Length: 342
Image (tube, rainbow, N blue to C red; front, side, top):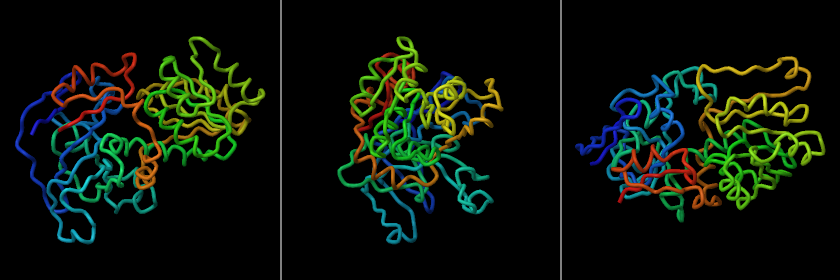
């Protein structure tokens, strides 16, 4: 099989390898579609250190076909060779303090496909059976590969407790921001306001249902939001860009009792200045949203309502993962890059 192994920042080796062998309670997946996530990109650039060991195959957003399965209770789990499936990359022990208190995404023995063990940037991948979810009928592999990010978005919505009639501001119209727009339009929010410096992405956001789009290079985002909220401010501000400006900006855009959701991955070991008195006096909530512990099945159902065609801008071959993939991320017109295997 062809596999792309991370060696060090800006270096990935692409080679033919032997097909990996499975153990009990594992399956061999023929990878059909595999998305390059922002986390993969940060690892590639060396922004995140210590998370991945050298010679690991990255890739945690993927879908494919069960090629082989090893389980003594195969009928009980209702999985068969040839099934089309999506993969939950996060693996939990089920025994630690956090797992036993409904906080398994903070598992003390956490591991992840595509991070601590080989992932989907290959033609085949071995995964634990418990990480496999059947793809609903009518859902193609390209859409199913959005399973993990869609589940994360739904977890973010749960964390921020968005209500019917709320006004929500989203910072960033990349793939995550555009998934948020589509999800929020089904929640009967009053207004979706989204900001990005790329006007082409904002046009897609409008198509998906954003009520107000703002290019901060052309308009004053604070003035626009205040106008759209009768001077009061929004109820929820979602950072979908991983920007350090999210908390200071969110404080200026929210009404009293508003909520700031930190969803995008900000730089590690960087700080911002805030005034704690303002959090206290205005009852502002600052909320983190990390991964997708309990939203997987909902995400698979919800993907049937989602249009990924305008988001999936770059379909590439595994052998071209560097030049057509990592080296294109961040360039104009590129939103989501996904590897397609035959």
